[in-house]
Length: 109
View 1 (cartoon, rainbow, N blue to C red):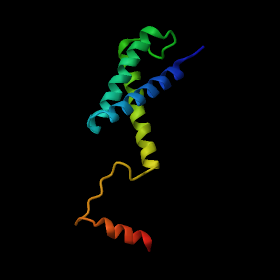
View 2 (cartoon, rainbow, N blue to C red):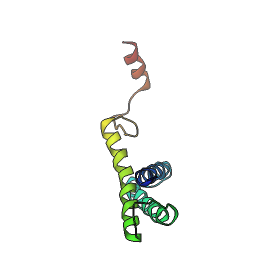
View 3 (cartoon, rainbow, N blue to C red):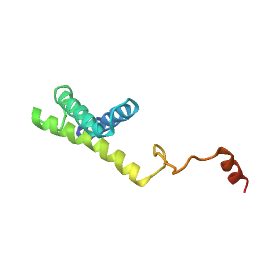
View 4 (cartoon, rainbow, N blue to C red):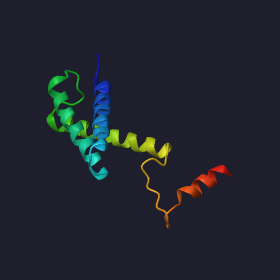
């Protein structure tokens, strides 16, 4: 049975989960694609030696397949975020301090 496509998908999913963990700890967002790529590379190299039907025949190809799969996890996350924008995580800055009583009055209107 050919596990090539399933293996690449599994590397992408694992790299995505590692990226989600990296977002949960205090790591700058600019490093998350690198973390996913390195995770994918490590999994690709491990897959070369562990999985019999791995879609690479040498170390360089295995690393390239893994890196591409890891970076695909980052791309999939960004596609989802672009299609489903939200205000979560965004900071709203006001020019002057807001009075909580004004907000209560605004809600009553």
